[in-house]
Image (cartoon, rainbow, N blue to C red):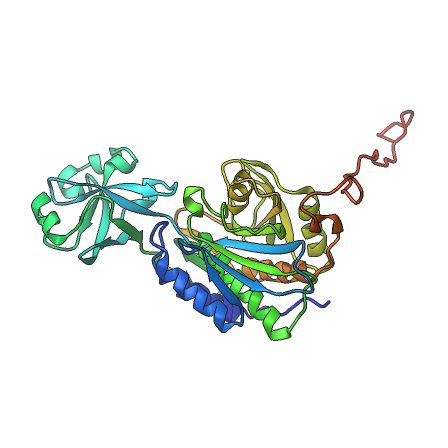
Length: 384
């Protein structure tokens, strides 16, 4: 079928709304409510796990060998490690990110008494006091502290505010949506992926397209700490497509334009047949793409496989510059991802054997091992 039209205005509006909602891992109830209500508005049936991961079903022609698309709602953040004698807060990170990017960040502390604003600063923040030491202080979480914008000159005053060890700290995203299509913000990983999924759902609902099998739209809440899709898949799901960020950096093949198809991450290669199909769909639908391998990266796909789910997985990404920092993406990649998602979900099921949990050899897949044809013969001079 023709490539579906993606409403990029809706996509960016949803991304703006998502970025306004603090959602570090462990503090995701508000963003879960927001996304669940939007899914219901789009016409999907929504169910939540006990802790709040979302599963929204869009029915297809049959339930067996269902497909899933997954993104995560949680972001990086921090927690209060210690109330310091100087009235400031020692922090530990939520997720893996550098204290280099924490320095100077505006943030919010969620305490039982309510929220407080603050700034994460290096221990030696003032050049007027420390002179050149502001540039020689090491980088690390031991060398930053959170200054609370409230009367907090010592430990007793911090305690009086109701701030305690373990309180969650969210980092302000500070988003900018530029007229040239670039988007700069913290937490584009993976709120941009969530916005892509919502835009794909809207396109399919607007066109009233049918799919050969059921689609499970999954939104996880603890991917940044490695849990991800470990407990949200059902046995009827045969394949899962994860959407997340891809690192556009020296030594990587990702791009801020088009789709980056991940061939492997630190947990190993993605499913051969599902990945090949996604590349073929990009070619057939004229969707710009590139392939990449990520050495220090894992996604919802890894958590699902490690939890023991027998499911084919693939990862498609939007290229992000400075991932887990001040991230930058381009709306072209987000639109391309949504186009590929809709093309995949409306495409025919090719591995019919996958409808069975277990089956014999009949219908099992084949990977090619035929020698490639070459023009050069052994007695031919390559220089001729």
